Length: 72
Image (cartoon, rainbow, N blue to C red; front, side, top):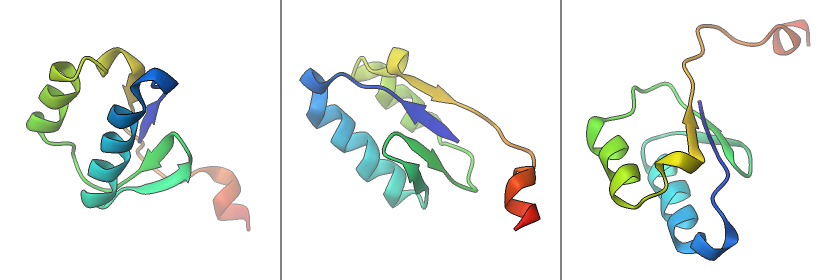
């Protein structure tokens, strides 16, 4: 799961991040919250640092689906 809050002044970088996540098969849950079933490649992590947006991005590992989704 990838969550981000990139400032409006860096809109192009935010758009790049959304495009790359989509290309890697991630799906949008909310505008800045994406989920996928792949491990993020090292070059993606390096690109976040190179573009100076790593401090605006949080990456989480989720082991199972949420309980509310199962209750539906």
